[in-house]
Amino acid sequence: MSLRTGGEILVANLLAQRATHAFGVPGESYLPVLDALHDVADRLRFVICRQEGGAAYMAEAFGKLTGRPGLVFVTRGPGASNAAVGIHTAAQDSTPLIAFVGQVGTDTVDRESFQEIDYRRMYGSVAKWAAQIDRAERIPEYVAHAYRIAMSGRPGPVVLALPEDMLTSRVETDDVPYVEAVAAAPPAAELRAAEERLRNATRPLVIVGGSRWDAGAREALRRFAESARLPVATAFRHQDLFDNRHPNYAGDVGIGINPQLASRIRDADVLLVIGERLGERTTSGYALLNVPVPRQALIHVHPGAEELGRVYQPTLAIAATPGAFLDSIDASAARAANAREPAARAYEDYEAWRAPRAVPGAVDLWRIVQWLDERLPADSILTNGAGNYAAWVHRAFRYGGQRRQLAPYSGSMGYGVPSALTAKILYPGRTVVSWNGDGCFLMNGQELATAVQYRAAIVFVVIDNGMFGTIRMHQEQQYPGRVSGTDLLNPDFAALARAYGAHGESVASTAEFAPAFERALASHGPSLLHVRIDPQALTMNATLDQLRAQGLDMQRRAGG
Ligand SMILES: Cc1ncc(C[n+]2csc(CCOP(=O)(O)OP(=O)(O)O)c2C)c(N)n1
Ligand SMILES: [Mg+2]
Image (cartoon, rainbow, N blue to C red; front, top):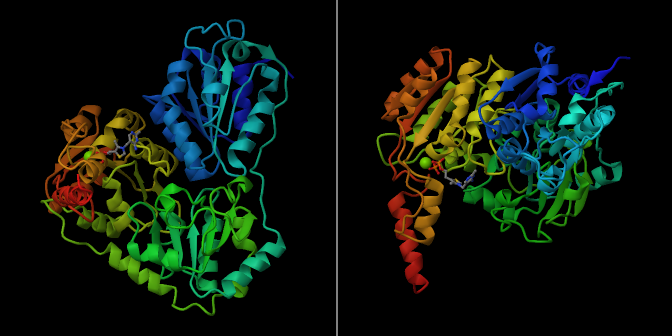
């Protein structure tokens, strides 16, 4: 064995975990790591980003796409602060991520040295684990533990601080072996009880969500749903867990849920929930199911035992990964032979909900998304952040049953640009469409430079309504006519894209979208379509004026 720096030991142990990519913005605080990466650039690619928020989101998207922790490297205080949005998203989205943060030397710690923060306290309540590696010989132990924690149970983010003197010190140590997530499998007695509940159900429904799904688990879900004849709904921003064209598909349980699906959930006698936490967005603000004891028999399957019964007390609490549960349940024993209606009835409701209605203005996003739905290859990836603009893809686009949707369960803006970069870097052969609002795009629009630098041929779409539309919607409903803090004066996004070196075009009508999209794809580089929409097209169900009228009406009735 020979002496190695902390930086070299860290990189060697990441390679031992078969890490292929790391995302980051450099800092002088972790130069030894950057130096060690220099020698292994062909195996562990460091993707240089423009802002740590973008880098952390990219790492988060890596975790979503691969199931292995996304790695992000950031410098001390300012870098660590910028990265917070991605770490929070990883926490709420149950995504494995490890953030490596530069830290002042142990010789000057606790003086509030330049850019010093105690990351254990800063990230204590957001990360699954926040720690500092004070001795280089313990790096392998910390890396193994970080991987295991990030991936196991309910996955989430880990923050590891790297004191500068630890990274430059030279020690002898072995590397740690490859670490896998801890398996969580259901006990046989609970499986039999679940089968019995489903077999005797008259109005059963399955809801799927969360992380720790792989291709095998998705396939097992399809087989189970078909054989047990169960309708399957997908949780908020998890629409790619089940083929949306499948006759057993019931739609998505998210913001602006199909009222028919909401009734179906309320009226269900047995709910089988797999992988989903049953968070606020999937329960219509905790209103869909009774707290703390739902009226429905709830079979809750989640890999993190601590999530079972957190809000909703289940009839059966099963600590298992989706794959382990679906591989072990006997679909024929669970077959809902007494179901009052065929599973396909729910699909008819979904189809009707998806069918386009009239939209104000020259650009009809409903038609555009339906065109994309038909046009895009079956393995294309669609990303988005947060905003009303996202509702169009969530409602009208059909995500197939493989990993195709990158969207924040955390409802965090600015996710659509960086997550698309990760998708295109990992899968250069797949079509990647990044769907953004005008507000959302500029939260991480700087990563367009990263897309150009890495020649990532993503089609960025910017839906420009000249406002933070979602907040304007709430304003009109609760404070009608009192517009405050939500107007935006936007740049010419197409010209901005061209300034970055990307292909950029404006789209002024529905008919212009398809040819512009084809030209964007044919440019074989990053491209941006600036789509100006009528501000009246604020939601899929109501115009801006209608929302204001509803708000005024509510005010009148409240006696205001
Ligand atoms: C990081 C972050 N900041 C603020 C918000 C609050 N927020 C939610 S949606 C939204 C407006 C989004 O605007 P835009 O991207 O233009 O989409 P639109 O609603 O206009 O379609 C805001 C400000 C948020 N969810 N995330
Ligand atoms: Mg907007």
